[in-house]
Amino acid sequence: MKTGEDKLIQRIAKAAAFKSGRRLALGIGDDAALFIPRAGFQTILTCDWFLEGSHFLRDKHPPESIGWKCLARAVSDIAAMGGAPTYFLLSVAIPDTHTGPWLHRFLTGLGRAARRFHCRLAGGDTTRSDKILMNVTAVGEIRDGRAVPRSGAKPGDLIYVTGRLGEAEFGLRSLLQSRTAGSLDRICVKKHLYPEPRLAVGQWLAEKRLATSMMDLSDGLSSDLPRLCAASRVGARIIVSKLPEVKLRLEKNSKDLDLTELALNGGDDYELLFTIRPSEVRRLPTKFQGIPLNCIGEITRRKRLLLLQPGGREETLSARGWDPFRKRR
Image 1 (cartoon, rainbow, N blue to C red):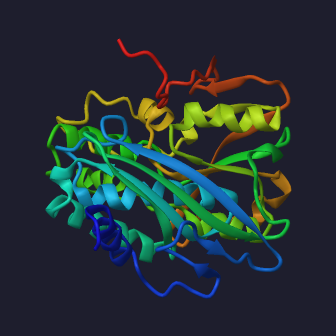
Image 2: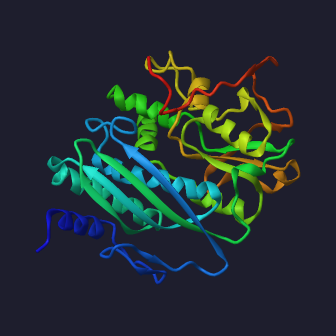
Image 3: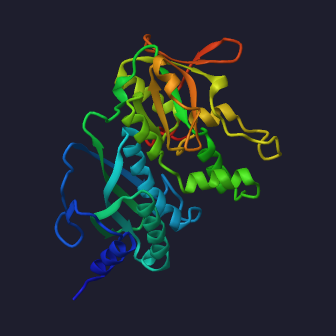
């Protein structure tokens, strides 16, 4: 006889099911999955929490977006290495009151993300909790010698980002204010709810060996750039006028917004931050599959993080992006 948990696992497996491929020798239904690595490739492993109250709000975020985003966040880490996702493990804790329509909608979003990213469910765990808590472990692969770590930046390298920065943060603010009337609001709210990991860009940069270092922007440029610089033992100078900011019309709801603050500190964009040698810039297009590639500064030998303001004034870049351990006032 199947228990309530067994039935729940069966529903999850069905929602994220599609052709599994030959390299998953054993999937859901046993104590663990068996994965067969591909010859000539390295395996990428990453995991990510997605927690009610910290990463989403039950009364504001649609269940479909929670299902999509819990996988997209982990897949973005694979994109940042230049890899392709293959399988994932899902651990989920939910109240028993949310095992009906809410869970169905959550699984709908999860299934869409799994098919979109070609990332197959291989197993996981379930339990009951008063809060909604999730952890995703994602598995990816990349050809031997092609992975792009954070630690390869050198003085003189140019710093690039994909897309626009601050859009997801603007979308979150619009969502919290229940303001999605304008087209920009809708675009940014969608980016916050349904982020698209930059898989194709990351894979192209890695395969062409263009990026010397790379990571995804999940906590905001001001918090993530210091991590890349620390790994590479370098500094950076960011040119404020080159930041690809949210393009806002000067409407009543946007006059009080600091676009530079959004671009520097807004989290959840899941764009790629990467560096490239100046001699390779000629090989880099201004857009890749419609996604802008913007140069925003350079790597420096001196281990300082600086902002070059219009007019030439330099100031220190402070990490003011997302930090779960920062004390709130």
